[in-house]
Amino acid sequence: IPGDMVVNSMIVSMAVHSGDRGSQFIYHVGSSVQNPVRYSKIVECGYRYFKANPCYGKDGKPIIVREVSLFSNMERFRRYMALYHKLPLGV
Image 1 (cartoon, rainbow, N blue to C red):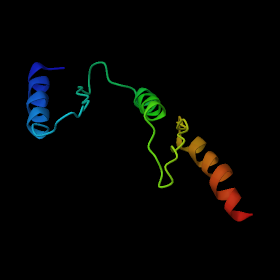
Image 2 (image 1 turned 30 degrees about the vertical axis):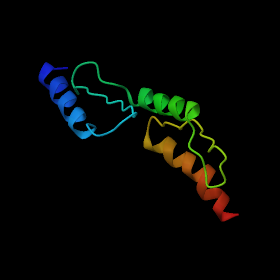
Image 3 (image 1 turned 60 degrees about the vertical axis):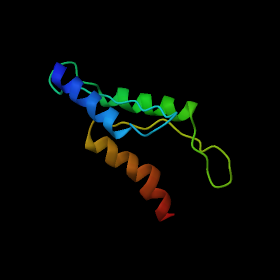
Image 4 (image 1 turned 90 degrees about the horizontal axis):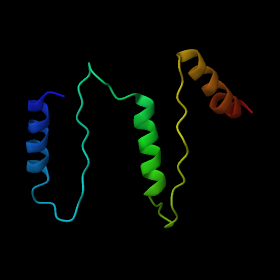
């Protein structure tokens, strides 16, 4: 990552959160050409985060998170949607 991107990101994040007390924010800065983060890694990190830090519903119970299904092409996505969402609605 070019150094100016890192420095600019740090300055902006400090300015945005200068009045926050006791909060932690995590930012990811990356370039698109070298060593890109794979989408599957972002999904995995999101799943692990919400599994460890669940959101709570109106009833006070934690919302259960499931792993997200990733598809390698549109045909697999369409097949999944037809089987799990469209077909049950037609019954």
